[in-house]
Length: 231
Image 1: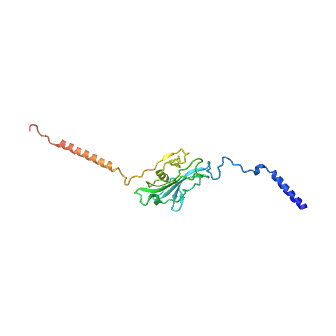
Image 2: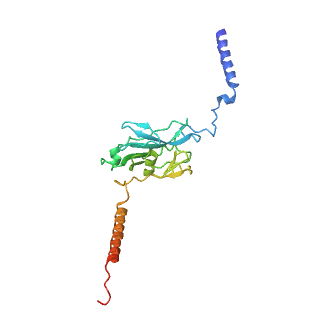
Image 3: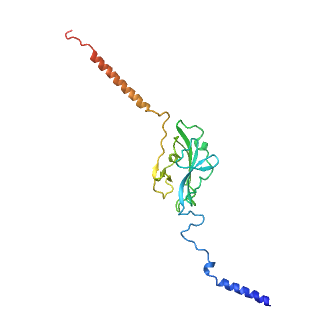
């Protein structure tokens, strides 16, 4: 009997404690409207374009000022970097140089590089409300042997850079990035273009020939003996 009373008393005390718990302890945790939803893009995260170079098996971090050699594969990716430094490499299968550029060798003084562009994930990388292009870019570009990764990108797409030379937009993405100046790719010099153009040389030679011929005629006229009058 005494044991039953003790059990009943314990149940009653537990029920009373439950009833007197603050309502906030039982309610769901409050959600700050400023906080991003799980899995959604963080509006405050740093976002940037990063460049990578393939070693044939994986993407390796690179720099916009690097000058990749002939036969290289470089990739550009737009991604959110919550810590301001780490960024994502291009997604999908690693491109092969032959797929984009074929097997023909580059001309003398030139190089060919496969350039891939990944605009990032629309859910986690894009600015809230922004939508990346549906398809990325994979193309083969030709450039001078000292062309940088940024210049090669400018040969494959429309590029804008900030005052520090950092890429801020590719093909006008992200849409909210309105600043920056256009970056143009340098045009490779034609083969053997180490002196004045051939047409200019030929034209100069022709002019010299005409001048020389005129001088000879004038000299002959001055040295021709005069004929006495009346003969």
